Length: 167
Image 1 (cartoon, one colour):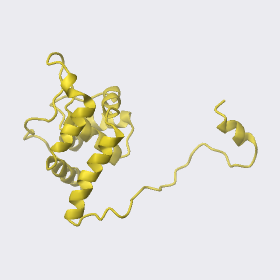
Image 2 (cartoon, rainbow, N blue to C red):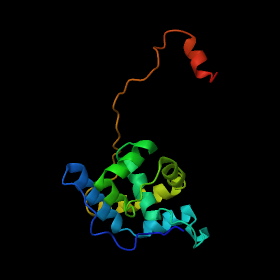
Image 3 (cartoon, rainbow, N blue to C red):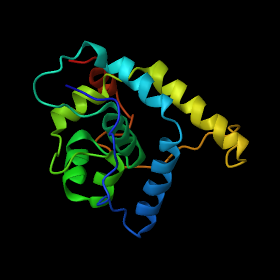
Image 4 (tube, one colour):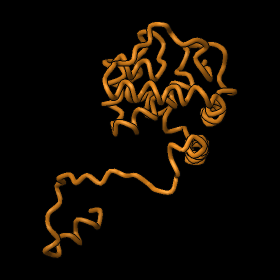
């Protein structure tokens, strides 16, 4: 059984006083102002098709918030599972039920159900409000162009052709 939203936020949710904790708290407050987003996520997760018996799955809200954490901190699913089990701020942001720490396979399975069109709709919804509050104009794209070392040799010979052939 999967719910759309957590009915009541725990009074024990704690965001760190660190810069990242403050950002997570602000992001959480923004999401709380747009409850319609949970309907969009629920449609992608086919919540109406879930039976009322069996183990409770992650709520649509928790899945969305976990996906946002994954992207926000540039984590893979293994790292996301670790941080969700280790960090009080991540747990508070994701609105996970007490002592529930999803494994990487659950995170991957559920997050991947969110469609690209839904992500675009969420982005447009949040961007519209940011424009109204004059926080963001939406005219510039910010991206991380950090250079990282990779295991690719310089393109000095025909071996690159062999590398790209998939063999």
